[in-house]
Length: 356
Image (tube, rainbow, N blue to C red; front, side):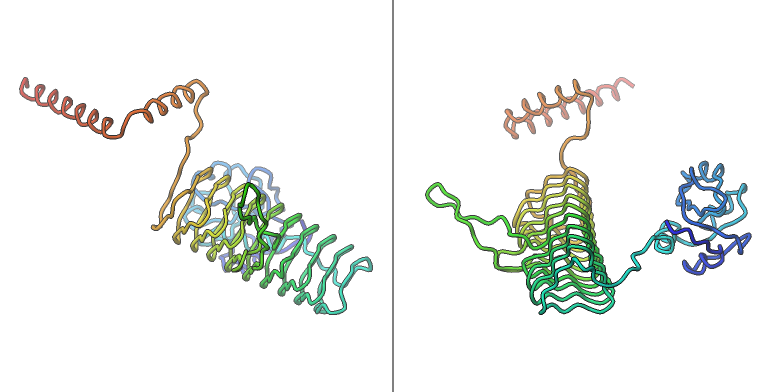
């Protein structure tokens, strides 16, 4: 965290909020409600946090007008329509930024590479032939850009990232440590008991404002490109196979695996640990809850889940036994039994009504 101090009024202007109370109050940073001091700014996003806010030592709070009226123990506020969004914006104010520019003497840059003047290229970076690195981009140590890779302006490429397969990266993209983009897709043709490797001839295209976490793998396409559209955000430990297309502003949580040639729509939310089979189409505005297993196309927006939630162990064992028993009974028999039970219930209800 930066140790600069900013006035409450200045912070309020940055988020187009209303400053209430001591507007010249000096604040050193953001903090949680529980750990904030009189020099910190915290935010309150919902009624369920009111009790924490009432007892918080924060010097000022980011709140809605409705929440402000209930926080009688505080005097200093930034009043906005969306406190969480305001908090997100202000994190960039207090973020410690990479200000150093230049190329470290241990970096190896091919003479044909085109490098903007105001970049930072860290120690032991390797930039291959015909690469392009745009203005104000930061490339941390031990990054490898293979031949023909293009990186746009204002990007951040963290340590030990590999960009290969003539990957094209847009502007304001963040790729975090140990991620590999453009590696060979998992393509093999079976013949006479052996697997015959298929050379991957496509690439990866990453649009503007994409974020990829650490330890991810985004494979190049077999023929067509793997595509991440604008504003896609990907958590750590995610596998994106060859020829996958991910629509704009879709969010993917950790440990998700997406098999090849699947298309995911725009504004989707994919929960952690989800597995998506290959050659599927998922519509726009779909939410998949954590640990979902997707084996068929999803053609309509909505929220989808699969799997069984956590049980106490003995209950889980009994549930599994019942599921197995159910699987052994033909569906038509199950329906007939349910219809019979329904008829019995209706008969009993009619008898009670007659007795009354």
